[in-house]
Length: 382
Image (cartoon, rainbow, N blue to C red; front, side, top):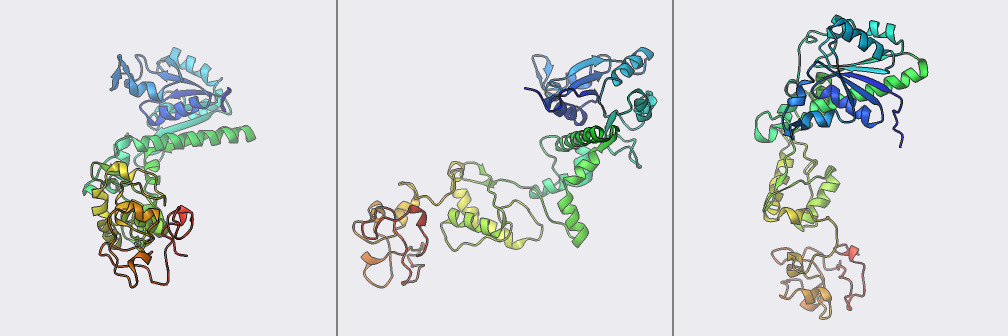
């Protein structure tokens, strides 16, 4: 099957992750990517972890590419590269600003060789500005942007992510820029320079807290999202907004009147969001009593299993022939007025009825006293 970028040739002069990953994406889309390495190969060929003597790091980010070793400071190597530029559509490089010019392959020189060539430059702090000559890696981008601080809020100290997320963002931005430049070239016949840097990409990852601070002068907006402790592990709980959070809390606690505060389960922490903290403390005991397997079951309004606590503790209908009462082997406590056998109302833990006497509840399917009802109406008022 033909790829979307069939017929596109990319010359990649990139190392480590941000640049090579952009070339990897183009290769996955069908482009012919020729990786040009220094004599002896790129440094990451020997980077751990190793499998049968081959770097996993290098294999992942350079899959599907062709490889060529050239000394671009030697006249013969420069001649070979110049001939390749004439047949290429994109040159992808992540040297520090000015290195390509020193080697004699700045954008002006590339345009002489191929008028519609596209040059994508990936760097730490961009091609202009006071930090342009400084190198940078992923941890520096996380630290300088404030991402480490936001990630580490739950533990009280800055914390970097497990993967090089800023490098990955930068490679995606570079890929988007190259694809846009290809579209522009197809329309106008002109090449472009795509300038992408780690610092810009890192700042896009904290745009919500940054915008919130510029508007209010206060910290907040987003933060670390730790999982919740369960009985035998951890579970991730997520709901968006008050309505969805309230529904989730009602199902989890069994209390139909439970109301969640805004953002209670979204994982978006705020330093002064005390109502949300109270909601979390209220559900903490329930989360810690249940196993992670119990929490991972699909959330629905389906009838509980035979062995669940709701079967044993909740009785909906008082009819002698009602299936729900037959499953409830122990008699349910009820202090409602009138005969106990006619009570069809749900009771709380103390035995008090939470439903007015004039508002009966619907039964489970199969109840001969109330007639067959759809189980989805369980717990809803008429």
